[in-house]
Length: 266
Image (cartoon, rainbow, N blue to C red; front, top):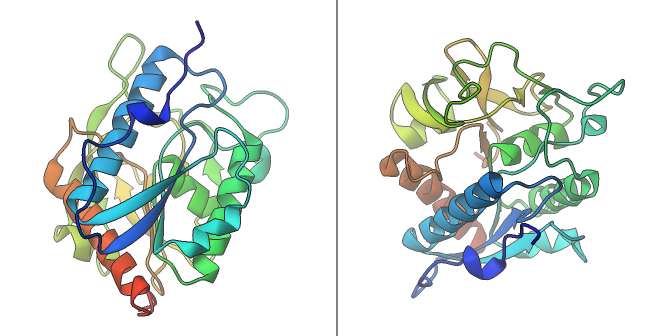
């Protein structure tokens, strides 16, 4: 039997009673070479993300890029766009290696990548907040012309090794003067990480908002508008709930402001 993540498996138990914002949530529930382990992660992380949106007062609609989006520009009709994690971005999208497969690569779907870029373009053109997690953060960066480290060779801070759990707790330093610092109210945080790629060259109009102890970029943001990406997984419920609520809460507050016609530009 093939492995498949179904929409009903990720839906939260309840909806927001009086939502203050309506969010487009872009994710590929299914992607190439999915294993039962990755399917379970997609189920759990998506479910926690949607549940947290409800907890902080938002409603949502899933944009599942497992299949082509009929019209990615629909992202402009929401109050904000949330980009969740998943497979790697196709290397051709950021000028990565073309002479063979990227080590440890998985889940590559160039069509889904381009659907995501189109959705980001539409949301930003409509002055909507954009929040990306892991793959979502990388998509924001590549959309802005940035690049990705194809495979982190010295990965010990960022994921578990062979025979170890993939996810670990990683200390992350938050850059001063950033929106991310203001949201978290601290100069560092501990995030749940399990990544073999990360932002390399930061895209146009973005700045590095967070770094790992080895200097790897762990967060990007646009200082001029509410666009933010984090490399770690605040939606991992094995991690701290307070940081998750702070990040999702700030995003939804910005989306609520956009709903009422307030600019998300600082």
